[in-house]
Amino acid sequence: MNKRYTAMTVISVAVATAFAGCASGGTNETGTDSPGGNTVYNDVNLTLRHTQIKESSKVRLKILQDVVAKTEADNPGLKFELEGIDEVVNRDQKLKAEMAAGNPPDIFEVFGGADLALYVKAGRMMDLTPIIEELGIRDDFANLDEFTIDGKIYGLPFGGYCEGVFYNKALFEKLNLTVPRTWDELLHVGNVLKSEGIVPFAQAAKDAWVVGMMWNTIAERFVGIDAFYKLRTGETKWTDPGFVKSFEAFAQLVDKKFFTDGSLGLPYAVQGTQFLRGDAAMVFTGTWDANRFVGPEAGKLDGNIGFFTFPAIPGGQGDQTSINGGYSNGFGFSANVGEDQKAMIVAFIRNFYTVETQKRTLLEDKVLPSMRMSDLSGVDPLMSEVQRTLANASSAWKAFDSIVQPKVGADLGVGLQELIGQVKTPSEVAAHIQETQRIANQATP
Image (cartoon, rainbow, N blue to C red; front, side):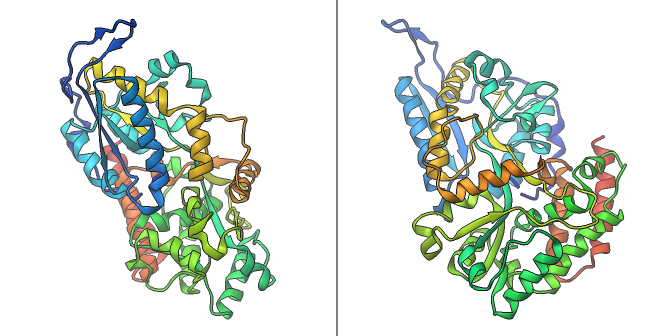
């Protein structure tokens, strides 16, 4: 996650070129045996790129820093160089350029699926399969599908996620509202809230990936997740009735003014703030935001926030009780490292991917674990509700931008912003994205 779900621009053609050469990214000296029999690696440097720079990410960053400190303490001579960067800049710009040039950081946050496939094809990603098998942790992960290509594993998720609606339970109770289970019930809830002068959904649409979340679930309800995969083969088209209906449904919410006014100018963080201030009754987002909804930042809403999956759309061809969830955000590791650096990467993986770290992440940061855990004691009520919702979902599927080509995802994000701005019709948006899809399919069969 981040977030997991970001609209991407087209990657440079250079990234598809073959990986050439293998140069060390740090200063390495030959390892020597210490008196205790352990190998000591002198002057090994590792660069580590993360996106935990926001106020809401302080806990997540502290956990990472603690793992880094332990790994350095365990391995004299090892030095990590941490770089924090905005998640959108990292995914859409900087990491792409570095992959094209063949000089990514040694360790970096990366999304599985379509992003990863491009980098693997270019030979930039370290094959982690033998490492996690040697460490005996391969079977400890809940799911590695989004980081697996041709049977090999090229990244490790540091947490799971699901997306849905967080809502103000006290406000719902005050207005005698119940959790909507169908599209019509959702419209009813929105109409009641509007009549009371309350914005139904907090929204910050400056970053297109944010609005893509709710639309993604609406579209899945109409067409089913398989239809997204078939876009790449031409078996389905964005102009098919189901996809057009998904844009029409999203536009209907815009027309009914169910979203924050002026959202196109608002950055992502404002969305959660609107909800916590009571300016909106609901917010559609991912569970990576849950740490804001529990504790001091939640203020008066602490203990009064609930979670539900998006309502069913009668007549839709998708799985009506499914949820967007998975394990798509994690760490990747450069293939362009020396042997000493690789040994220290193994040490980092050994310390980061543990049940203890996963439990700490769940309790302190409210991130769903990516590794199997039997001890769920101490989990707060909101996260327990999230876990129950995820467990009760009929199926889980990954986001559209992990399936379609990056350029298609980018144009889709722009199209949704155009619907919010009411400058294009749903049919016009669908037609434009389909043309982008056609071109992308020719370039990446």
